Length: 200
Image (cartoon, rainbow, N blue to C red; front, side):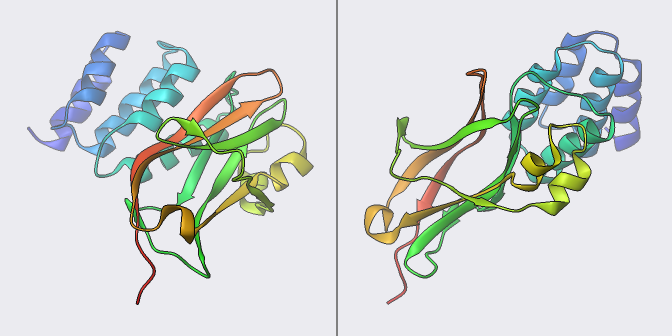
């Protein structure tokens, strides 16, 4: 089936169930899935937070681009979900090489009421010893103008540094979870990550 055919299917779909089938169909190209997410927003068929979770959970070779497009679509329309949103910019692949004695995971997190904390889990266990550093993200502050105070948006970047001695040569399910000040949370990253040993 051609991309045009998929686009037609997206255009004529009427129910949330039809769109969910489109999102779950591996044969549907990423561009048509993006149209489906957009259409669901336009037609107010599904709660925005459910759409966010669907975007984060999509398993697709174009997942990175698709999730980014969805986030920027929401920013453009100034849609405010109830739970925090964010994005892990790196790593972009399923393995991490150490740099300067540490593995690095970084991204950004936003919430209209303010982000309370960002945690890292490995195989379902929180590691409070890994506390993220705050980074300035003027790009996020500019794009997501509807999300809280400008200073919060500017300080929305985070950066985890994991010592090589703790992870080298192992593989773990890494989850990044954002909590807001109302005790609501969202997992913005959950992936098996292989921590490559330092080069010899």
